[in-house]
Image (cartoon, rainbow, N blue to C red; front, side, top):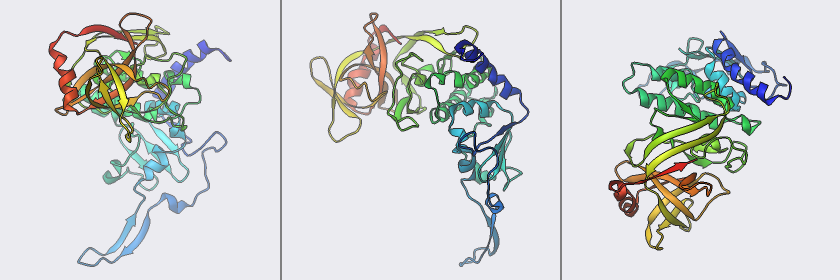
Length: 384
């Protein structure tokens, strides 16, 4: 139904089944837009190997050798124009087989191999470590017999998230729904509960520790849209370049409950109306003062204006950089490095906060001042 938001959301959710059940997905991967089509003018030699006669000194083998562009897959598929569109992450991931029409070569991928015209039997092993946005082997690492299933599941999801955030959307409001098909596959394979970009049973605390490292793909500063899209603790709430270092350590908080309000109760991976994390942990009201000639380093002061130490802060957006925040330590990893979130009160409900930044510190004073409180009963509060 034309111009019906409700109909669009219903039908777009069904598209995952089209790609998932197709025998072959044909993609105009090298096309910048719909006017380009599948076929490009090219010289056939570009898609084949080169032959060179080599005479080495020092006893090295002599003779004819073939040479190839090592980054043929990255240029032809991983970083090709079509694969910079966020909707295509889902389409490519769900399809059993993809035939890519690139600007210089044909490429093929399925769950067992990647191939191109130069290597119709599959890319050599030396090339496979260079693959960019390789999706087809993702579920092999979350096999039911895998020795550490939860970790492998999280690594696989992380790979999808980082690829997705490196792509562009024409309409920012599509961010939730354009990933819902992939999210549903992960939810099904792990029998997990999806929560606006995170999974409940797969190291949920670790999933909170993503942070912003760059601008949006269009060059604009990181932003959190005024129209609600996701809770502040979800990376889906931002338009930004993010990273998500996967490491483990001593956890300093307890997640008591998660409450997600779905826009459509029949679509658990679709848009949400709200999301609340109920947490028990330590909250420290602190002031931040920028350390000159640094990009992200701040001195931390307590309520008595006494210096505690220094931390590195990665704000979620350029627009909101408060100087007084609540510090929530989340974990200690790598022996003596603390990581956590900086929060602001929403002023709507008592003990309700929203996320504004990620922080880390290897300052022993910070560790001693904040981590020593692990033996003290924390407080209960909500992050929305």
